[in-house]
Image (tube, rainbow, N blue to C red; front, top):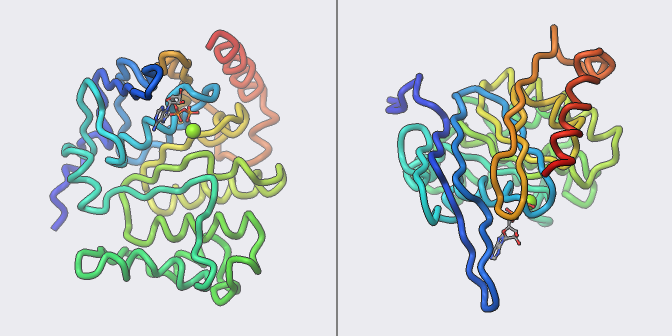
Length: 260
Ligand SMILES: Nc1ncnc2c1ncn2[C@@H]1O[C@H](COP(=O)(O)OP(=O)(O)O)[C@@H](O)[C@H]1O
Ligand SMILES: [Mg+2]
């Protein structure tokens, strides 16, 4: 049985603040962050370095507690959501175990979770197929390209069937052609799974192409600068980036970023 209310927001952040204290000074990594993310939404987070994008993802994932404010993840605490395995995380570095094949890396969360591990609707092989690696399941990480390794890490993040996928600059280290292809494939994965995605990027184009909304953040203190809805007509393909609406949108995002 699934206890989560289907209509509850995926994330409800109310005035969330995070302060870090170091020996010399304190940093307000996040201040007064108000945000509601609906289940099934694709939200991109855009902003200069140090504006608290990673910090926010880490609060959602229960890796850091907020210093102020309150946050619910699927109507519960981040800790409860983590324990229920509602959250998957993909980082810039795929962080695969080098001595395990692609398939064995994807299987890992099911094994380390022991009895508590939740088996997803899709098994490891099916997920590798979904990310386009059906014929590479026995390859080791060093035999895969950077883009292929990130595909493996996406499949691994999805293996316990999380409701929320947090992605922190996952394609930041990839070349542009590979990044474009992965962007299109990620949209397909999102549509097939219905997972809620929070995706951090430095790229205006990536933020506008992937997101249903773009959360633009400003630094010192880290805060919301503007939430920009994306209304691209029709199905999104790389050709959507040539439409007048896309050009208008990215110009607007650039202007907002300049004031961050
Ligand atoms: N563990 C930490 N200790 C001290 N300061 C931190 C820590 N993590 C992040 N910060 C600071 O908090 C601010 C926000 O960081 P971060 O969330 O990583 O920004 P972003 O991901 O947007 O680049 C930065 O000023 C950063 O130096
Ligand atoms: Mg970061």
